[in-house]
Length: 290
Ligand SMILES: C[S@@+](CC[C@H](N)C(=O)[O-])C[C@H]1O[C@@H](n2cnc3c(N)ncnc32)[C@H](O)[C@@H]1O
Image 1 (cartoon, rainbow, N blue to C red):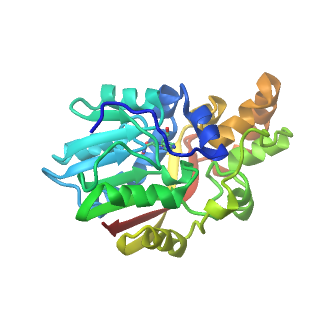
Image 2: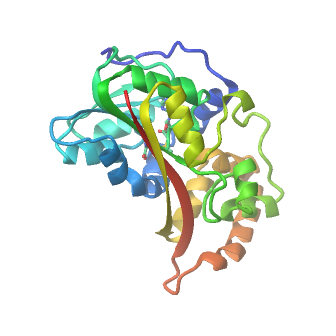
């Protein structure tokens, strides 16, 4: 394994945009959307059969939620993220984890290195999902597990989806606020190329794993309600996290303020008596054998 690598695989416009989206966001992500993405981590590690002594790679590690949970299970954990700040955040948050800067679809590990490779809400951030899965299979030993999560499309109204998935969900809370403020997707923020896309359904994701050469691919769907306070939910987007965050911040301070006013009106639909938000989400968890 090399210490840190410059990725050499061809980069799509979608990947270029993703580098910009995540750069400098590690702390803001850890404080906001990392809590949302933590929901499926136990199921993800179960699907990967990660336990004591398992050699696990947490790819797209972000601020280290999955790595920490895998270490707590007694696994021997490596982590990788395309964003240097994220890799550093995982190193800080999870002592004992070796975190590399590395970008899918090309990772600096030899064939058959890991017993299990997991990617929690990462495949939906790569420009070439099929090539990324094939890479995860390559570095997993025969008989080892690859397990991934992504958001389903159509999604649920509490999510931060934009574009086609959001339209199919009947629009989402922050998306509606951005729309009410007249904010649109900036030109530099492309959608995934249609030839690289796949149906974000249990069948679609299982078929992608199968095409990537993973055996006995299975995919399930989980719906849950994410509870958080309205300011925290807003803070993630306001700090530019994810595509929705980039739509918001593209409006400058005035656009953000106008969207916030719309958000404060719309969020009543999701509010509990205690003033929290209850935000419906739906995601997919798939696994297969290398
Ligand atoms: C939604 S976050 C998920 C983080 C973490 N897995 C978690 O559960 O909190 C997506 C992460 O994927 C990383 N990422 C995006 N594209 C990537 C790529 N092509 N290769 C590796 N990491 C990538 C981002 O930098 C970011 O840290």
